[in-house]
Length: 415
Image (cartoon, rainbow, N blue to C red; front, side, top):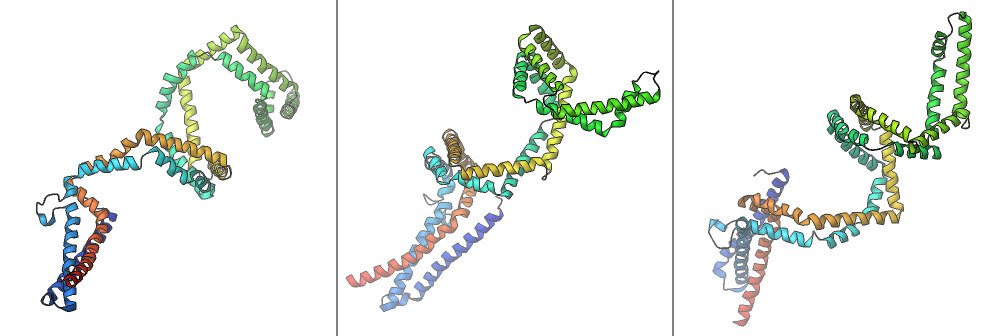
């Protein structure tokens, strides 16, 4: 059997304690031999009796401790080498003890309640270094998950699950309801502002390119300077128009966009002809062979962006994640109701796991020990508890000596 560094340290400590116990036995034997001729006289008689009883105690406890792990002196004495010969029975008894006394719902709930998990977790998560550790672990798991999803998996999932389901499912009414809710809530205004802001910024950055496009479409019979002035005027008016749309929510163009979106939503909801056309367009779109590849390309783009953000510890994703973790930790620390809800959920989860899987988990004990060879089991167990068992030998030597003194003294008093 292979010994780890920890096993080697345990073995060294075990040998040291065995040497101490054996040394006490040898000392008692030397004292007994040296005082044997004066065994019946005076003080030396007490010394001799104590040494004799110390040897008896040391030998008895040596036999008891050794019999747990092997046959003393190799002799086939009954009820010795208990662990090697009865390891399977011991394993099942240990498994039952562990299940009955540790893996119970009551003990699990009491133990969890006494640890104040919510408060300690909140304090731990509130520290910046710990929050970054949590984000780092989540990022590592997320990156590993991203690597497991191949382009072929995405394409197969889209072609065999998502697209067929969307093709069969009527979406016109649902899209109409969603669009109507967006318009009523004004949720689309930010998108409109974003679009026209981008257009305005592009126009400001590329005036010559815009004017060249307009000038190319000017009548061929018009003089060149007229076309240039017309292009410049068109550029200025377009820039002004886009800026007005960008800043003025009540601009006629913005109002027209709102009306158009409302009309589209109403047609999708209530106009069967429009709804049928939308469904037909949806079927053509989702049935097109290129749609699956487009989804794969979009996924590849999203995956690349996520992988880059997850790999960069200074990215916005990391910073926001760390702040979110710290905010959650602060909430756990300050909000007693939140802590109680969290601990109640954890208690329910732990109780469910213990009740449902406790007996199965505890079988790890018996299955592991059953796979061991008998001698290997004895060696492993002795490495872990043998050092402490040597104190039995040491105590047996000392207690035996004291008992010998008391018996010797009583025998003189009675005699």
